[in-house]
Length: 538
Image (cartoon, one colour):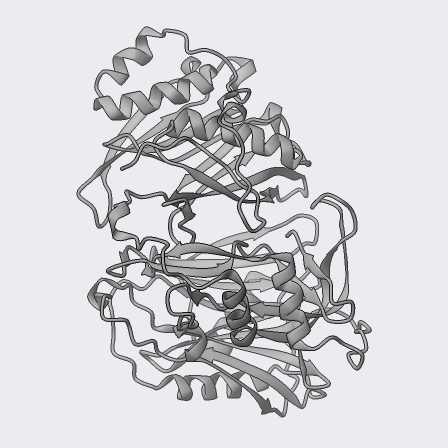
C-alpha cells in the first residue's frame, strides 16, 4: 500500500485539497497521556496493535485513565479476526459520575468504533462546520496516521434525543463528519467510510469505521475514461425524478443546517444513476428494477381502533391478528410529552407483539416483530402478498379515500458473486401505500403493511395518516423532472469515484469506476415550485 499523506476535500468537482500543515494541528486532543500503572498492566495483556490503539485513545482522552476498564474478546462474524471490546466504567468521583466510553478494536489494531458520553459536555446545538472539520481531521490523523489519504464527503447534523416517562427531554446534537478513502486519488464511496461525530465543545463523541483492508491493485486505473461532460450528458438522460407531496417537510431558512422550518411542499426526489466511467453506460440498478409501483382503487370501511388499557391492547391483537398474548409479560412505555403509549409483550428474544397509540388512544401501529433466524420457503408470491395487504388495509382505511399508490419490491435474484446461503432470512415483506392528490402521492399520509410470505399472514400495520387537513401547494406551475435533475447536478456535480458492489459482508469480485454525485443522502430534494435544491436536516 502506498504511503500517502492525509488530505481532505470539499464536495465540489475537482476535490480541492488542503495542505498537510493544516492537518497536522491536533487541537482536538484534550491532553497528554499520563502513566497509570493499573491501566498499563491491563494493556500489557493485549496484543501490541490493540494496545497501541488504546494508547492513542488515552492520549486523546486522558480522563479515561481515572475509570475502571473491562476487556472482552469475541470473534468477528465472517472473519478470522478477534475483536477486543473495551468498556470504561463510570468512576464514583463526582466529576466523572456521568462519563463513560466504549470501543471495539480488531486484533490488528483497527479502531472499529468508539463512543463516549459526558453529561457535562452535552448540548442542544452542534459546532460549526469549520470547527467540526478541524477537530475531526485532528482525530483522524491521530488514529490513522499518514498511511492513507481521505476525502471529506460532507458534514451533517446528528445526535440523539431521550425522553423519560415524566416528560424530561434531553437532546444532544453532533456534527457528523464523513470521510471516504482515496485510491489512486479517487474516493471509494459506497462501502468504505469513516464517520466522526463532534460535539459542541469540539470533542469526539463517536467514531464509526467501515474502512476495511483495501488491495489497491484490485482497482482499475483512471485511464481511458469518458469526460465529465460526457458523463453528465449520460447522467441527465438516465436519472429520474419522482414527484410527491409532504405536509411537513423540512426547509432550510438560514446559513446553518440547524436553521429550518417545516411547511407543505411539492418536491422531486432524484433517483441518481451512476455512469460507468469506462463505457459511458448507466450502471444497472437492480433494486430500482425490482420495485413495483402502481395506483390501486380502494373502498375503505373506516374501522377505527382505540386502546386505552393493557386489556384493550391485548384484545385488539387477538381480534385483528389472532395473536394471543395471555401469559406473556407486558412492557409498557411512553414518551411523557405527546403521551404516545406502547404496549409490548415478549414471547422470547425472537418474537414480540406491539400496540402503539396516540395521546388520545388512537391506534397507529400493531403487530408482531419477528427476528428471523431460519430460512423458510415462501408459501405465497410477492404479488399475492401485496393483494392480501391491500385487502387488510381497506378494513381500517377512511371511506373517503378512493385510490392509493401501492409499492413493494419483488424477490431479488442475487448476482453470481452472492452466496445466498449466507444471507439472513427475509420472509417479512413490506408493502407501502400512500394517499394521493391530483395523482401525486403524499409522503406524510402513508400506510405500511407487513406480510409473512412463509405463512401468507399479515403480521403488522403502521398508519402515519394522523395529520389534520393541511392545504398543499398547487402543482400546476411546477418545474419539469428534467429541470429538477439538472438543478440537482448543478448543486452536486458528478465526480469520478470507485464503488464496490456489496451486500452485507459479501462483495463483488472487483470494484467499478464511475461518475456520480459525491453526495450521501441527507434529505436532499428539489422544490418542485421553486426549482431549488433543499437539504433537510432530520
